[in-house]
Image 1 (cartoon, rainbow, N blue to C red):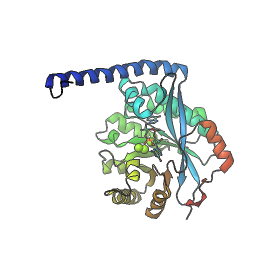
Image 2: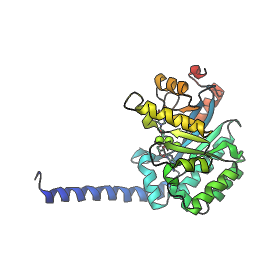
Image 3: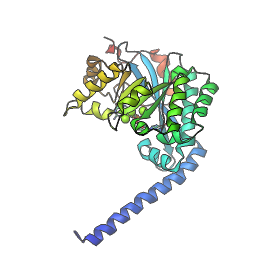
Image 4: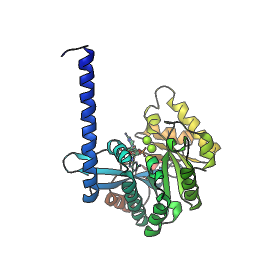
Amino acid sequence: EAKGEPISTYRFYSAELKLVSDHQAALETDMRRGIAQGEFQVYYQPIYSVSTGKLRSFEALLRWQHPERGMISPVEFIPIAERSGMIIPIGHQVLRDACRAAASWPDHIGVAVNLSVVQFKDCGLVGKIEGALRESGISPDRLDLEITESLLLEPSPRVISAIERVRQLGIRLTMDDFGTGFSSLNNLRRFRFDRLKIDRSFTRDLDKNDSAEIIKSMISLSKALQMEATLEGVENETQLAFARNEGATEVQGFYYARPMTVEDVAVLLRDHSGKAKHGGIAA
Ligand code: C2E
Ligand code: MG
Ligand code: MG
Ligand code: MG
C-alpha cells in the first residue's frame, strides 16, 4: 500500500530496522542464558592433505542449539557476540574445548580455532591461549589460529605484540577467508603466516568469471611466501581436481564431511584411521 510515498517508505524502513534491532537485543539476552545453559557446542570439520589424502586437522566451528529457534548459524550470532563483547568468554570456551578435544586425538592431528578481531582487544588473550594449551597438554604446533585480513589492516601495538607472542609460542597462524578483504601482503610476510585459507566463494565460483585465475594466483603467492594453501568449500570432484592440479596443499569441504560433533570425530578417527574416506585424492 501507498507505494512510492517517501514518507511511508521511510516508516516502513524504520519499522524494519526496529525489528532487526529487537531481534538482536533478544538474541543478546538469549546468548547470555545460552552460555550458562551450555547451548553452545563446538563442531569439527576435517581438513585433508592434497598430496597424501590423509587427515591433517579439524577446524573448530561453533554451533548454537537454541531451545526455541533451533540451530543458529555463527554467521548470525558471531557478529552479535562481537558487538556485545560476549565473543571474549565464548571464544575462550571454544579455545579450551578445541584443545581438550585435540588432546584425545592422535598427535599428528591438529586443530584450527577461529579468532575474532574483538578477542584481540582482550589483553588476557595470549594468557588464555597459553592456559588452554597447558590444561590440555597438547603441543603448541598442533594449534592453528585462524584470523581474518581485517585484523591486519591497521594493526594496533596490542595486536602486533599478541601475534608475535603467539608466534614465539610455536602456534600456527592461518589467514582465513583470504581474498575477501583488504590484505596487506607485507603483513602476511611480517607475521610469518603458515597458511592461507582461500575463501569458499572462490571455490564455489570456480567455473565463473575469473575465480580460477584468482585462486591460482593466491596459491602461487602462498608458495612464494613459503606458506601452505587450503582450499575451503570443496564440494565436488572438479573442485578437488583443481586443488590438486594447481598445487593447493590442503582441502576442506562438504565433499569430505560437514562439521561434526566431537563424538562423530572419534568415530571418524576410529573407522578411517586418518585416511580420507574418498581414498583417491593422493596423486
Ligand atoms: P570460516 O572460518 O571461514 O569457516 C568455514 C565455513 O565454511 C564454516 O561455516 C563451514 O561450515 C563452511 N563450509 C565448509 N565447507 C563447506 C562446503 O563445502 N560448502 C559450504 N557451503 N560451506 C562449507 P560455519 O560453521 O557456518 O561458520 C561460518 C563462520 O563463522 C566461520 O567462517 C567463522 O568466520 C565464523 N565462526 C564459526 N565458529 C567460530 C568461532 O568459534 N569463533 C569465531 N570468532 N568465529 C567463528
Ligand atoms: Mg575459519
Ligand atoms: Mg574460512
Ligand atoms: Mg570463509
